[in-house]
Length: 479
Figure 1: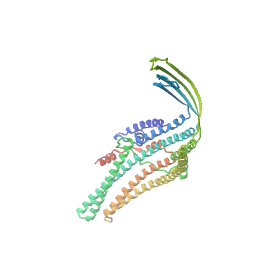
Figure 2: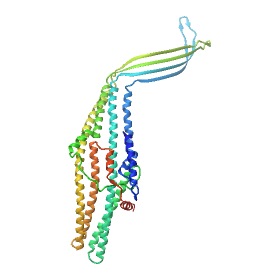
Figure 3: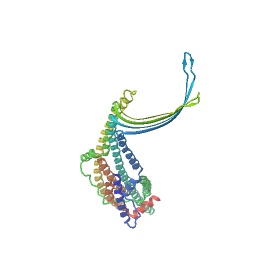
Figure 4: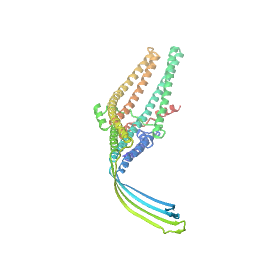
């Protein structure tokens, strides 16, 4: 599955790279698809998740091995040197002492084939391994979905920070111009020094905001580098034509239905609960007898040399050889192990109750996230439209305040507040658009439908950054 995904991603990466090179007059910029593909290769969290997934798959192979025949062999070679002293007592006296030395060499070979005929613990362990293997696969799928969301969140956090910094720069520039005009008016005696102080305070605040946004942009870029393992300087921007639409189907309960069927965290909790059920069966079966069939072949030979120390006579060597096969059926009945098995059985029962409770919690969390993310996404749709109208209203209010200030009916505070309201409306509009994107992905994650295709669909709404805006932002950040 992962190999097919990487193959599809590689083709898309080539296509996107060729498309990005077609923009003349711009240095290379990374798209959301580029960031996601780099994260697939370089993100250490996903690499660790893949290794855990592969390790989890081996559990089933190990359980199957306990049900299959076991073949074992052994070989032994030994040498022994012994002295045997012997005296015998009779009524007539003591017989002469005999001392015999024996040197022997023994070689033995054995091979045994063992097969479980009845072992409930091994059977239930196999059933448990199936749940554990599916558990590992589901966890890896969750980690893959998490990477999709982390890639999008990190990418749009950079765009968010860039927009905020650009807005802060524009606000600082506008207030600086206002400060200069206010200073000129004061110099010719048209206004009081209070207006100059008000403009100066607003400018100092704008400078502080710009420095704060500059730091936020630097942190956002570092987060992106930590995800992909590479530094990035330019990113594609979200198009102004990007449309925010309500989720389909337009019902929170419909999304809850998706979550009940497809949410990966719920499916994972189900497999964890199933594994606990089988583990409880394993522990119950520890008290059951086991039956094994054993087929063994033995081959041993012994060569012994004897000598009499009293007469220095060398006695004839003896040689023996044994070959034979044995078939046995072994019945083992566990009776008492100090309460160890009973304790393990109680422990498995408690774990079974725990995982069932966790399953209920996972379902409730998934349903809550589906409802809340649906409502949030719907609200984001309305908020984007409202923020867009707020920009128009704030710009009209600024124009009117500027005219009033020029006519002398409005003061500098009114003008500065109107400027600040306009820039705040622009920032809020940009942030709400990014919130809509992330919350819509969270909704799909809660429903269990989030996939790499969502990244590529979003990528279609990205446009190359403007060279002027890009250079201004980078130069400001480096200043």
